[in-house]
Length: 124
Image 1 (cartoon, rainbow, N blue to C red):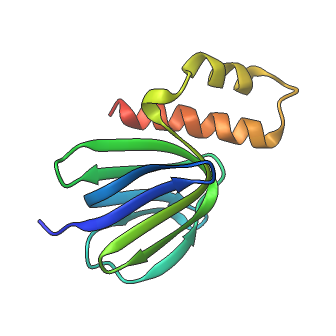
Image 2 (image 1 turned 120 degrees about the horizontal axis):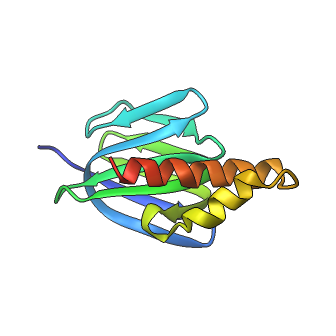
């Protein structure tokens, strides 16, 4: 199966870099799946969305992403998020507490929703 170079980068750090066979991301236009050879495009990530990467060794990497962009060429995907957390690093109780807090900002609510989505996708 063909693969592509993938980088998942947040403002504060690079989370993952390697070869992958598939990437999906939630964009302002809907969820998109990317395979090697995809037409070039530039997309905007949703606030509180997720990115899923299937590495060339079939490892499934799920991250909650909050805003940012991604670019696609025939052989690469670059995800540039404002912030991102691997599903395995998310504190589910803390995310649920933010969702239950009526005083939490809309940005904090969206980020917590993305974290809960990432946990759900990681469990699939």
